[in-house]
Image (cartoon, rainbow, N blue to C red; front, side, top):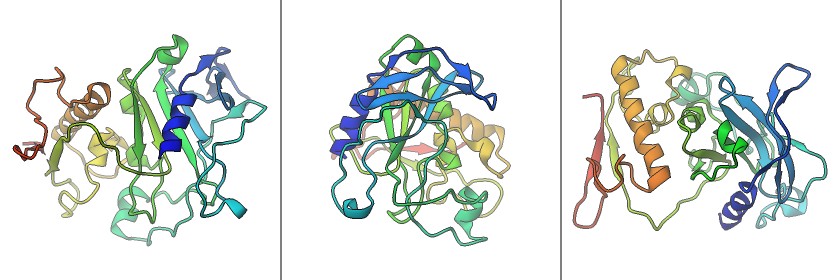
Length: 268
């Protein structure tokens, strides 16, 4: 965890070196940026408003004699790293065909998996790169009970967070927990439309990331309004350490030893 945070600090001191241009497939490539490990080039996405870097190594591959050992910093690369394709995910079994979560999150299949899986994907407003703006960074660790899952599952699409223009979203292929900030607890109570599963574990991810367009469920106007509210809460917390827009004031109080407050998230 400490190594990953150090890597992010080093990586995010980016220096732009060239303008975006098309590659042979017609996809727009981002400006080349410099990091302490080497130069990186990603993609321009979301109608030219965002820049996305896919598959940046944050540690050496845990293969061979590196297996089961503490990760080491990545080795510097000489040529420009083309961070334009999604990386391999951690070794894991596929979801059972026809299972609930296979239908919910993995119905289009699983990416290639390998031991070489210590990568991070970064999505940010294009203007921040162009003007070298310093923005707050959200580091998101995917779940999966340490057995499955990966950082670019469709329900964790980072574009809506970055599209708001005030944060950089980093999706890492590990997970951990952070401390030192107030705790804001919530209860997600929306019973998702489309079946009788209710408000099941991880169902709120569609709303948290504003990624409902990827889902098969018949979401309603009220669902999209709830998602907008949750996007506001989460991105405010990234920017201010407080989910309320006015930082210090608002309906969502911290959960403390004297005030066990839970924010209810529902369409009512």
